[in-house]
Image (cartoon, rainbow, N blue to C red; front, side, top):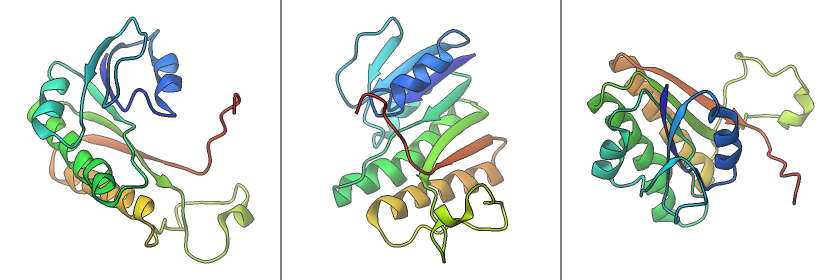
Length: 167
């Protein structure tokens, strides 16, 4: 399968590349300069619809790992508008499979650490009002609406916490 990986230079990107590279043909993208890689690389701003649509040409799936947490305008451009651009590019290019990364898992009420492994679909995620979680949740809603209105298979991954062994 040909997979477009958006945000390949971020915290998750190198790990996802390692997991997919033996099974799939990868086209890596990021706003940063190209890393050392044997894979095709396109420098890409996910907030640019034309660039995302062009990068998605010929792909079978898109994995969107893009995220920005701090700057208010850019966070919206990456986390919400970028997600809209990814979904629009998928529809325009006939791509049926999209994996999106949502906000760190957040719920209303008690701390979710208290639930241990008993978190289930009955406990709905709540984005709160923080910039990061709110803009990523908007992206998650964009994915839901596109999946409901187009012939798309979309998964949004919700995370709790990442550990980087070297840090």
